[in-house]
Length: 251
Image (tube, rainbow, N blue to C red; front, side):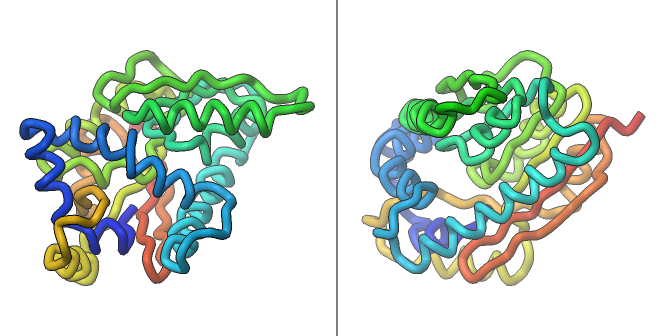
């Protein structure tokens, strides 16, 4: 996912990474446990006290989630399947899947995000007899282990630079038995220009660095991992851009 907020505040990450001793992962974790959690919890929530830009991002993300839910509902649905929501945020995908009876494991690098996802599930699961309580845990993508029927990684690869993307896609594919669904901010001339515009804005802004990925590169990484793309859709609004892939084992 690429949002205007990512681009507008591009230069913030350099200061965050310096503060974290040069460790970019720690910078991401620190951001999403503090001011980033406050910002994105509101965006992914229900409050009307957000800007028009944030509302556009909320609606764009919701469209992507709805597309994933639609793909997963095809055939026999999700009841009883094991599903990993890698980078679950506040549970926008995990919770509806758990309410439909999927056995969901949701992880996020931010403990604040994972805890909020668990809280939101408890609120939404009341009186739902079909619900299967998910497990939420604070863990980065690299540390996720196990095997799942389906692995989803939505709007997370934006935090991984291109030189690490293939390794991460390969790791996610190794966790999936039947299907991998992921989204990423597509690298196109227009989006690259948008990102560069953000580099000129003040360092004091509070957002994380946005990495764009070429569709061909992501597809090549999936092929290297033994997967082939079976569905693809782009969600694009004024301030939200996310390319969605569904991939299955090639043989």
